[in-house]
Length: 199
Image 1 (cartoon, helix red, strand yellow):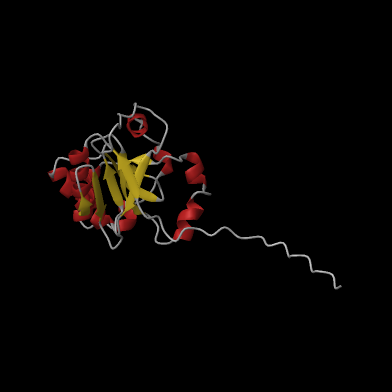
Image 2 (tube, helix red, strand yellow):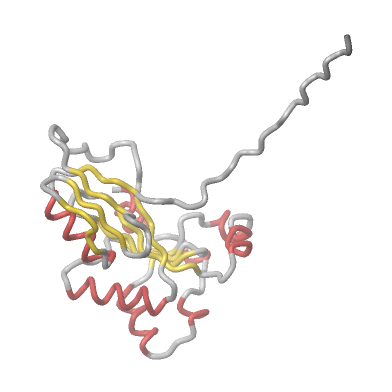
């Protein structure tokens, strides 16, 4: 009888997800949360009932869902868990236009930060969750990943806060994007802004 071959040891390489699909937020403020995300993200509701809403802003069936299941209780301040959701815009012009649209609707960022790799505006939804609206400051992923290994990032891994109205003014005045998103790690980070970011 011939010897049976030993099965080869197969090492499977992990398969990464093709994309990030959606986030679901539990809430006790269903209508306020649904309206807030519709306004902020320019999302449309794909389905809604008394306690569930599925929304999208692109060709995905839903990007965010709001759920008001029975028995949900308020989260305590400073609880561990997800810190924020982040959404990237295609250009600084889109970010500025969104800032101005939301400001006119009474929705303003709690903190704004140039992180070096992104220029970001952080908002709070009606439940207090943070939502980051951002643009990439580099035009390719390799350059953005490399930024994490720079002295500038090691010196200041948080970023530099900025005035969003000043950013809008400079954008409308025609200042180059490279100047609008220029990162100066020497400026350090405003402690008051850091406290707002951590709240």
